[in-house]
Length: 333
Image (cartoon, rainbow, N blue to C red; front, side, top):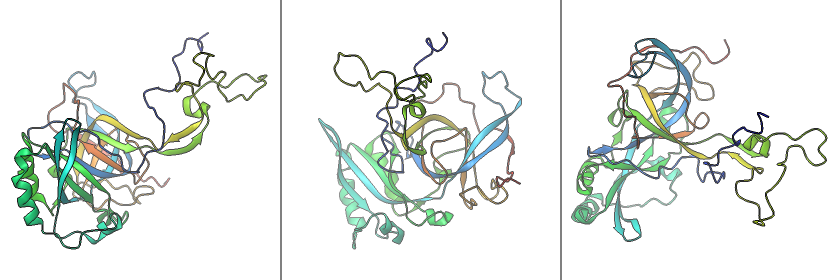
């Protein structure tokens, strides 16, 4: 009788369950912020560990005690601002009106963008964009990662990052000074604040409804297949509804997890590398971030960190007190 009253297996909130168009998750909206600055930063997932910290949430029954928490380590190499994108708006919404690229583009960028412009007069284009800044609807920064510095790969990932500011003109005044320069994660986030994580989950290929939705395996004496749904739906409407659990793609979906706390933004002075390095990743040589809990995707997957769009009401002030970070080897020793 317990199985009859159980809730439906498999959430209907994640539909359609189709493959993501790219391995790099796309951030579709940015929070509003009056402070000029970047609203996000890309990173690469290195692995997981566990930390000991003093619980500082005000409503937690364990406040003031030392607790054990899982944490994800993401490698955060700097990103380079290679362009500025200006948006205009009409009755249908925003659209790209103009772009400005820096004069000196990295050679590795040609691995991602095949046809790069040969001659760019960025000073002239920036002056023209400044005249139109008052009538613009929004501005965004075009950045690419520098994965060669981590030894991970050579091909960079290109993305657009939203900007904070009270007006589009203020956003343009902030980003124009950063054109062609590198930005570090310590200039965007600080330890203790919340971030939203967008990434593409692990791909599991074509799976049946039992594994994909968790439906019940039919009895042994069933004449038909045992791992199929018992019914595809009623006679009316005379079609298979979208809510029927069927076989199909499982995994490699873009997902966003809200309000992950940044436990620490560290560098080589506060090492986090385990003995022998992270499994299937290696050593982290530059800046990194410790995120509480897990993040979507496998090792080496690009994850986008974003300012929270719906943060907690009672967020502890300042960075948490980490008493220990595990650097035990993951090699089975």
